[in-house]
Length: 68
Image (cartoon, rainbow, N blue to C red):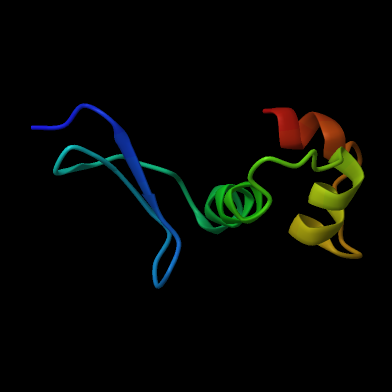
């Protein structure tokens, strides 16, 4: 069995360690993971991530929510 982490973003966003699924969370963490994977090797600004995650309905401190 392989110990590495496999990330899938075509179809449902999934993470597998070996054959076992890894809990990612709800829609926002899945979207965040997909955005970071799509930008692999590039710096993605906090502002861009927050804009993509919340559009015009950002929380009071989106940077803090993003970090948590």
